[in-house]
Image 1 (cartoon, rainbow, N blue to C red):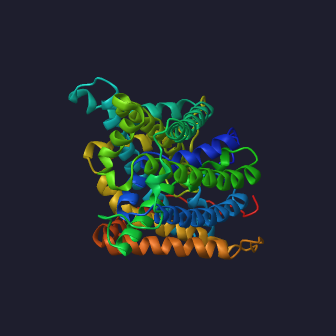
Image 2 (cartoon, rainbow, N blue to C red; image 1 turned 90 degrees about the vertical axis):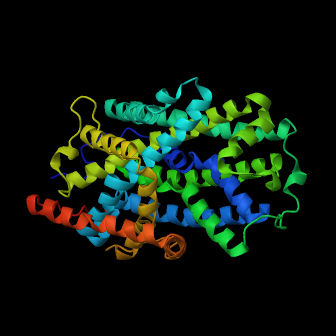
Image 3 (cartoon, rainbow, N blue to C red; image 1 turned 60 degrees about the vertical axis):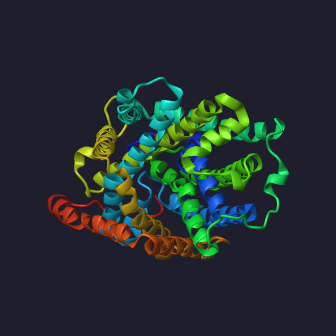
Length: 443
């Protein structure tokens, strides 16, 4: 049986790989998370420090994933790394959690989040708005189905446009005179009404982690990236640096236009910021900006997630039908159909919010576990950053996981139970299929 991705054409370049890093990391949260964090922390300096701490974590993780991508230049990402480091069972639990549960929930959540902003832009009645999330999911499913090059080009264009819009917002806030440096002052002093310091910092760390979340998704298309040994490290490190710059600039612009004292709630912030910058039309203009960001994230997500399903099927851990490429389009068509149908199922059940609450804790643990595979390689890692980068990344993941567990222990433990439900499914599948050999690290 072929190793994952051995029969796929390498069609993605550096721009597409960076687009996945940026697209996954910058979606709906770019307009909501900084405002929430600023209101809770009550200090521009504290907000900047949290972002910089998350940058350290993401950069350390990017170094780890760059090394793993060099050793395993094939599609599947964490599934491939965990399989090589810990064997089929742990890898399957990750694949079960991400492909069958988490990614459908994230896609459904983004589609529902986008529909609220579609309603602000288009004159749709309430009955029509109900069908918008499903229409969004189906549209991206069709685009991914009919061509890797098409979906990759569209994803790259949307995410480049996203960056242009975000930089333009910052530039307009400055040149239009709406941004005032004195709104950021004093940098260190916490504003009245902010939360207690330790809970505020803990909540901000978790929020910042999820805002940055997704930079690792570029590893899932490694089998379709040209010159992955060069491209993926540049995509991980360059993409994380770009995401950091965007979040710092956008956070500064938000607070320079709207002082912390004037921030009210997540839902009202987009309207507040839009009205401050563009007047009466501001809400619609900012809603369009939000939609571009969300669509960029959905484009990256719906491209990356089916590659995990296909990698599982190629190694014998899932049904063989999902390993096949479409004879005409060359896409993992069955895997794309499965992911789209699962997302629609989560959407129609209205369970996407619960899915995310349940699974996030387990997802953080798998991230740390994937980075720890560097310590289990038969050929040692040789780099100036080793072992400090994986140690720092794993430590940060552990802190985030503990904060989630302390704040929401019941959903976190339910999520662990959902992940462990994959064990009998793994037993059933392995009883019917023989797993392929673990890919050689040097391939």
